[in-house]
Amino acid sequence: MRAVDFAAFVDELATVSAAAILPFFRTAIGIDDKRKQGQFDPVTDADRAGEVAMRSLITRTFPEHGILGEEFGRERADATWVWTLDPIDGTKSFIAGIPAWGTLIGLMRDGVPVYGMMHQPFVGERFTGDGAGARYRGPAGPRDLMVRPCTELSDAVLFTTSPRLFADSDLERFQRIEREAKLSRYGGDCYAYCMVAAGLIDVVIETGLDDHDIVPLIPIIEGAGGIVTNWEGGTAAKGGRVVAAGDRRLHDKVLKILNA
Image (cartoon, rainbow, N blue to C red):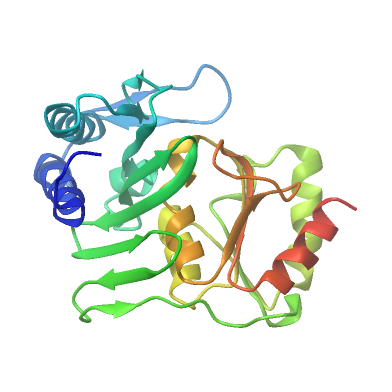
């Protein structure tokens, strides 16, 4: 990578995307449905504007880098350095006026996630991580992020975006875990993963994710001491069915139930 203040550059990406997105929040915004079949999959002008702003800045600064974006697809996806962009993760919350959404910015080197940010511009929070450490900046002041120990499902706080997103066989497996958890809640999208890193949620179980949904969150959770894999225990960088946990011992138990 060329000599650029990397942290400042990612902050600038977050800032320019926020400037494009926030004017649309809690307004009478136009909504399109991307689904080919199945459930409502909304996209808005805010999603598109945020991604265009970030793509333009990346292309000007790092023209040799690749980009994987939710709204405008892939450019130079075989490059050594590839950015993953999800301008609004949690669009359904966004169009409902609920601030449980965020902008996801990730960077991969040779297909491995090495840096991630989740920015929630409405409340002014930024979660960052590089796999070795993770950091929070926001109204409560800056601090390091750290997962909490939790070895038993009976002590665990469990999240998923919505049980309606699971296929029938996967839903049955999820419900086995849900029945054992101390507390199960729905919603949150990217925020749930950041709360794993913050030590407030113990496990997130999802299905049907794209790479841009999870790549930015992997270095944040791993940097805080947690673990993110697919349901088989392999890399989650390609999306699909994902488990994120703060405690590796809990993660192992969840995988055993999911694969029983």
